[in-house]
Image (cartoon, rainbow over all chains, first blue to last red; front, side):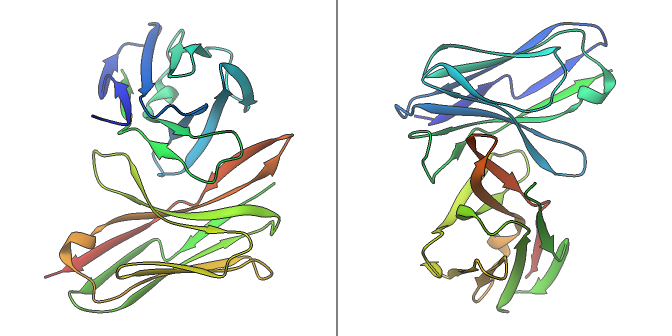
Length: 113
Length: 114
């Protein structure tokens, strides 16, 4: 019944590993986002897709690559994980690109050791 | 570049008090402003959304105002309850780099003491 779901909720991994975080929305929305919340609680947008098309690509390392197999899914792949990647990552969706609403997932807490 | 600031960073009040959370933004060319609530271990919950053409929105004990010209918004919580304890985030949506983006403040951590 969850509108925007992220998996896993917690992820602990070693430096250098490659990991993925999955996001799915069952709201029929066109637009999906990935946000990173750092240790200071600041949320920053990383990527946005609209109907599987990348529309926002903020300045993030190339090690981060989003993939949208269909408009209900937006996965985040991270290669060669670094300590500084530790954060909570939030997925969100909006009905359409210009929508004034955003629905967020519960977040994935990534810890790199 | 849009910047969003929230004051105070933390607030502790006794149950039953009315309180105001403040949000300011640097670029008044926004589409809307949203207030969110974040509970530990949970995602963000949208509380109120104010369109750029609106001045305020109300939902239950919550009232949010928007003054675009001065770049300010306030969230008023009436008769606070312990269940209101959470971090409250303000976010503005605007057009930037040819697309629409959300920029968040750092939040105000509210504690309502029974």
